[in-house]
Image (cartoon, rainbow, N blue to C red; front, side, top):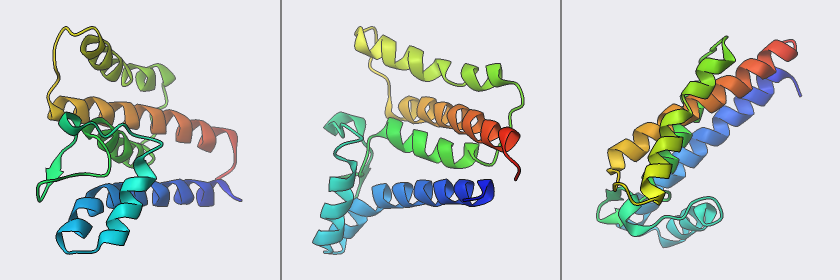
Length: 140
C-alpha cells in the first residue's frame, strides 16, 4: 500500500470515528436503536464515557468523551499539517499531560471545553509527528 493510500485510509478512519461519536445520540433521537447501539459499543474498549465527561446531544451522551472527540478531530486535522520540527509536535502533547495530571491529583475539575482543546492539541501533535515521519521516510 502506498503512503498516500495509507494516509487516506487513516483519515477515513478518523472521519468514521468522529461521525459515529456524534451519530450515536442522533440515531437514538430518530429511533434507530441498532446503529446507536453499534456506535456506543464501538467506543467501549477505547473510551471510558463517564457521564460528566461527555457532551450531550438531544440529552444523550456522545459515543466518546470530550477529550477523545478532541483527539480524533485533532488527529484528522493533524494529518494535513506538516510540522518539520519534532519538538514542536511534542510540545502540543504537554497540555493534555498537565490537564490529565492536575485532574488525577484532584487539583481541579477541568471543563469539557478544556478537555476537548487539550485532546485536540494532542491529536494534532501526534498526527503531525506520525504522518510527517511517514511522508519523510517513504516516497509519497
